[in-house]
Length: 228
Image 1 (spheres, one colour):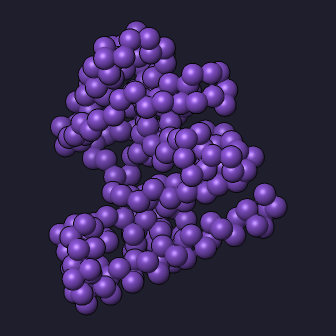
Image 2 (cartoon, one colour):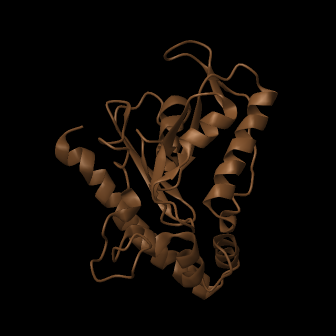
């Protein structure tokens, strides 16, 4: 939760932070209710909140406030209302944004992208998200979907991705594939094994790093080719 001390360009301060399990297996209704409970608790700790933003891991409708397609979250999320029920629970306006684009906005305002004219970024985890900033502004396209850098095609004959395409960058570097390539239970375990000199883990990191490097090189070429 961040609050600006001045209207534009002013200092920001982090008031609160925390982690709450998504528990997506319980279904979309339970997840949305948990979002409302979490926001309600935060607003109680910090009175004076006037608007709320929710980052969702996938595609959404910014006008209707509904999710459209969440690649890595189980359940029926197509046309699922999220903003409206949370708004009703809080009595406050609520807007949706892609979670990786929310990260990008934070980097532009508070972090490594502050003061930069053009920025591209990657968010690695369960999947691979990203963002693009042009003229110091987050670029979201006409419907909030611009910046899906994890779904650039690296190999059209490559492995299936959760989005339905083949050979997406995400299909090579997401957390489960990272661990499988290294013969480990998790990405964290893979890194620890590589540090110990485990050859399979080292080879796996090399494999994942190669594809990640291709994706990053593709992104770097974008601003150069269009003259940002």
